[in-house]
Length: 202
Image 1 (cartoon, rainbow, N blue to C red):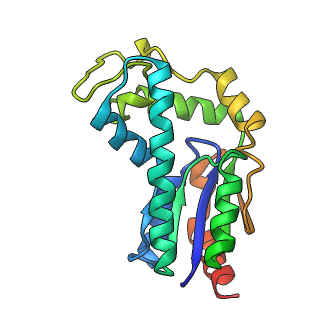
Image 2 (cartoon, rainbow, N blue to C red):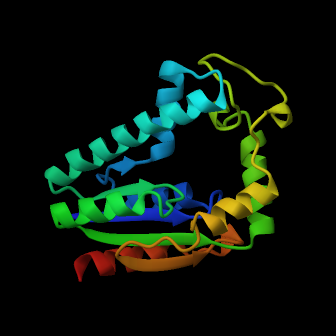
């Protein structure tokens, strides 16, 4: 697989990372670039005391993200990138794909928003979730035993606004494989990997 960018897009909490693991079983050398991983690194590095400061750090996150993409693309490497992409990122991604002559394959995970909200909330309330996602103030080492008291938890209304208004559920770049992830146990991950491979070879 050369000069292929696989975008795992769509709604949050739909099993994108789980599917990525399945893809890596077949392609263990594929680099994975996730903006959320970069966000967590930046939050730990700098911390923030307000939503305004958090928003300012977001600019650095995307600068680092696109820099990493350029590095991989300049080497002609295939890679995976995992995020609820929206129209905000699309122009830059379109430009990079054209500039470096890449094939884009979007695997878009969608589903019933009520079900997905319950999964998203359960993930946010877990201690394994990076606290920076849930707060408007954070510094490395901060602890919140009761995650339900976080001041930036995503509400059902906000989730719908992001998924619908920001275009999480309509984002596509290149070829599209859409996955109904309402029930993650019903997702045939191996068949989706087969389809990704098929498109990458065509």
